[in-house]
Amino acid sequence: MDQNPRTLDAAALDEALRLIAPIISHEIRNPMAVIGNSAYFIKAKLGQGGPLDPKVIKHLGIVEAEIRHANEIIGELLSYARMPTPSLAPQGLNALVDTALQTLPKPDKIELKRSAAPAAAKVVADPALAAPALRHLVRNAYEALLLAEGSCVVKIKASVEAGFGVFEVSDNGPGLSAEARAKLFQPFNAGKPRGVGLGLAFVRKVAERHGGKLELGKAAAKGVSFRLRLPLA
Image (cartoon, rainbow, N blue to C red; front, side, top):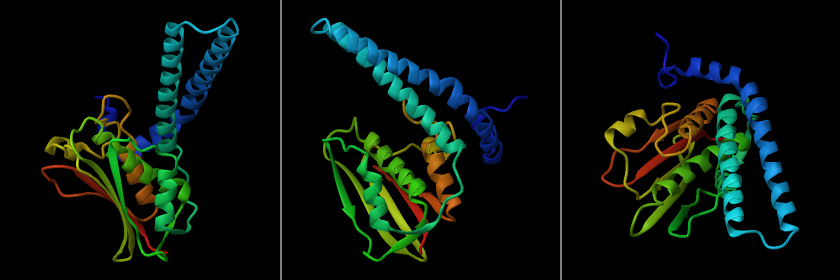
């Protein structure tokens, strides 16, 4: 019987994705770029004749938004499949948090609280992998609160603990069911309406490549917390 992608072991999944990564890049990403350029050209040409029909603007916007979403999914697949060997060097814990947040817009309804690590604290990490991994955790926390009511808070705490730098990301959202927690780190286990479900698998893979670990906090009535542990420099 053929194996379902959700039940492949990590080694088999990595090999399968490594083999299809060039196909994804060439046969899907390149056409998406052509579609995006064509949509931009059509919008520019139509605009030369005066103001665009609002319906045309709306539907061109939909095309552009769907292209962005498709490229995000492709990027997620390629990032997981083509993850390079980390180029390790000492990195400040607080600097990694800054880098992770730099390109991640915060929804207005969410309050972000940060707790900094000691200024001199550093981990041995590749910022090109560690910062995106941390960004995934923060993005997940934001998304968990998008439909929540009342106070919405995401906390990021950087600290030092038993030879590791620890990045703890928590939210006060609805939390996770026991079933969701059991499947949380399975690749292609998407817990939201859109996406391929590789975000947390990517973060765990990054942690393991660094000699660290990704941990899920204890079950609680409300909220979720993750701890990304990386070796201290």
